[in-house]
Image 1 (tube, one colour):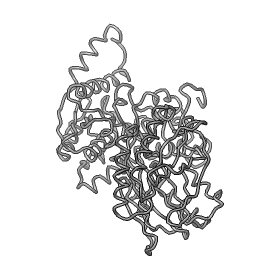
Image 2 (spheres, rainbow, N blue to C red; image 1 turned 180 degrees about the vertical axis):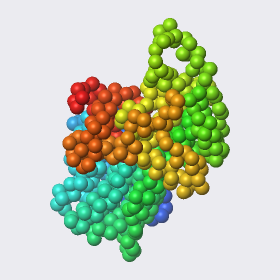
Image 3 (spheres, rainbow, N blue to C red; image 1 turned 45 degrees about the vertical axis):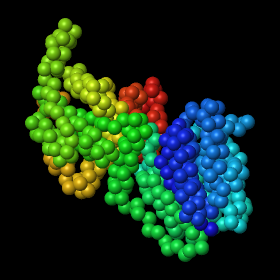
Length: 527
């Protein structure tokens, strides 16, 4: 038997476009002699569809699309993921298409992702179908984790999926698959979504693992792919390509570029602007923008104040020239002084503090948004997870933007990404940007270390606090200074309201703010 795996990039709500992609893959599978062709969960609708999954018109269009696709399935059997409306409610299903019609529907039983809870209901679970005399068990989504419930003979277990990317999840998925295949003595095929979808990235990485826990087919990560697997041909073991720390940084780069590209492409945008400060965060965002959109579609604005060093301006210029992007230098001194003078009846005679610092940041946002409104350059946010966590940022200033591609990466991870980019692209980020001490340059001789411990310490505490859910006592017992831990914890808790006002953040971790890490906007815990 020949099994085709079609790993495609779908768009939420583009039922017509998704259907066309599926039909094209069905025809290709038939042409290449496949007996069975597999598509991901929610292939027809795209995902996450959220409240669209509760709209009867949307679900009716998905069902009509399945009927249309079925007309092209005369010789080949297709398994296509789609939401369906039942008399119990909406379900995530795998439709079995053959002989020109929908012959069976397999519903997802276990709903574990927050992005689905409340939008779909639990269905009937796996079914076994026959293709070319072989028994094929069909499962949808996380039903695969309950493989032990499969009490029927099956030559292959097919899991159609929409598993998002998150740091460490590829290795976790591989180890889970290997354990399942070996302990349950099953050959498993997993077909996954690929592409950016709003603030998520689906990595693809579909494949086949035999009952000995060995990978016999692995498809591309972060790219569309199409493969034919012939069960009659011996297959050698495939080496898994993501097992080291360096691999993780490479994969983060690919995920970020794909997520950013698809956010723009699927939203109808083409051009991005970045405020270039000469610091590490804006430098990495500019590099990712060029990687995702091309240098011709990225523009930088440098907006120095009287507190900006000449070194930072020169570093930003050198970065822009290395990237080959258009840039402009717009000093904000006059705008800043005009606002300070206007405010004198209200704030005159008071000490310089965060008020004057934040004014500078907000002026820069005004200029960047003017470029977006006038020329269509969509503003990219340059925040990171460390600063987002502790509120080390200005509302309506450097928190502004249509999209944040690095907002789920800790500061130390941004540095790792910068080093990887330099290794891959011949030191495009000036070395001075990597070496200089972090500073927002909003007052004379300012350094982040004036108020914070080194970011290596901050990030280690934040990781334990956010990703691992550790209590302050656990972190202190691990060897961290109690005063520092208490300070970081207090900053995290006091800035929840700020984080609710951040732009959409590309979710590259397994514990993103406002999603897996969702704290009440107003609370008194831990103060």
